[in-house]
Structures are given as C-alpha cells and as structure tokens.
Figure (cartoon, rainbow, N blue to C red):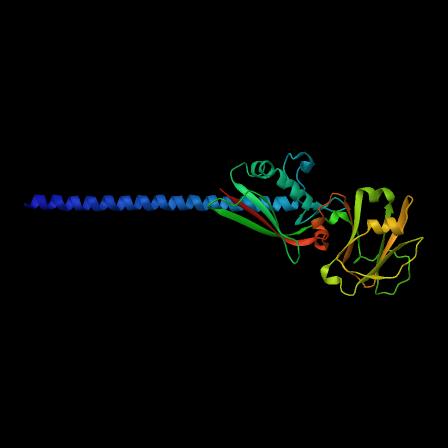
Length: 287
C-alpha cells in the first residue's frame, strides 16, 4: 500500500473514533438530561405533596365542602372561637373525604396528574390506623409525613372525669365526680356509656345518683364499657328532666361519659376513640 493509502486509512480510523466519541457524548448527554428531568419532576411531586399536606391539616377548606362534596377540602379543626387549631385533623372530615376521594383530592387538588392516598396512624393508642384513597400501584411512590392531633369521636364526649366537675356529695379529695343533664327523650335516640381506660380499671369503683335518689353503694368496675340507659330507666325514673351524678373512688380517673346515636358502631366504643390522639399523618403520591 502506498503512502496515500496509509494516510487515508489513518484518517478513516480517526473519523470513526471521532464519531464514536460524538455518539457516546450524545448518549451520555441524553441520559443526563433524562435524569435531570426526572429529578426535577420528582422534586416537583414532593413539593406538591408537602404543600398539599400542610394545606389539608391547617385549613378548613371551602365552606360546606363536606356537606356538598364540592370545592377544596380541608381537614383542620377550629376551636370555640372559630380559630383553626394548627396541625389538627377532624376524623369526621377525614371519613367524608374518603367517600368521594378521587373527585375531591385526585381531581380538585392534584388535577388528576397523580394518584394519592392518606393514612392516619395513632401513636400510643389501641386504635388501628385508617387509610383512604387509592392503593399504591405506581413505580415511583413519594410520601410526606406530619405529626398531628386527631379528635376521632371526641364530639360525643359529655364529661371527662379528669376534669373536676360539680358533685352533690362532700367526698374526700381522692374522688372523681361529674354530672350531666338528661331528658327522657334523649334516651330514646341516644345511648349513654361510661368508657374507662383499660389501665385504669383495677380496684376502681363507681356509683350513680341524682338529686332525688342519693348515693348508692359503690360497685366494682368490671368492664371498661358501662351501658347506662337501662340503669337510668330502671333506677332513676325521669318524668322529663334530671341531673345525674357519677362518682369514682379515684382521683383524676381516665374515664369519659359519652352519648352516641343508637346506630353508632359499637365496636368503636373504646376510651381511646373518644380522646384526642397524637397521630402520624401520611400523604402518598405516585404516577
């Protein structure tokens, strides 16, 4: 092969090498751009979830959204002065949200771009976690977590025996007493229960009376759930209205008097369900 042929071969080799380098560089650039785009998309999803999470737990939402299932939902709780309690969740609103989740959350909040789910996990409580939304079926699942307070069924609490109340007897300081007003019509549509923390029943005794029938003998607490309607009907005849008093032989006992509708789920009649619980709130999103 002559000198010109040798030079041509060298030039061809150099060109092939240059083309390989260009191809590898282009492919590397394409991969890098894809990674950057994916990273940016992931950051946007995480940011969107975080902002939406904060809005849900710190806003009441569009007025009456839970009644008409329209508008932007909010899970926050307000106090008696209508001020929002930060980082709080209404259990009622949470359950209502689950009834029309795709419309209220996936569509109204996330514009149907991603699927989501929400979960409340109670801490230091006997209550099971509660989850609403879609099943996690995406390849890339992102989540944000917040520590919140959830009221569960606290709205049904009539009296808390850790709060000192009025009593019709001069007990010693080691008693927990409180009273409630009751109309006979209430007993036809509602059930009254004493709910007691499971760890507080040992050696605990109680009694109930009213202004006409004085304090009977204290009796042992044998269950953490005591149904009161039958006892009121049989032992304390009420023509219309009466003030009832309940007494425990321990100070600051963890017990609650609750009044629930007749059709209330009796499996939920547990002390923990009627107090404010510290919970973990998890919002997940995927595509």
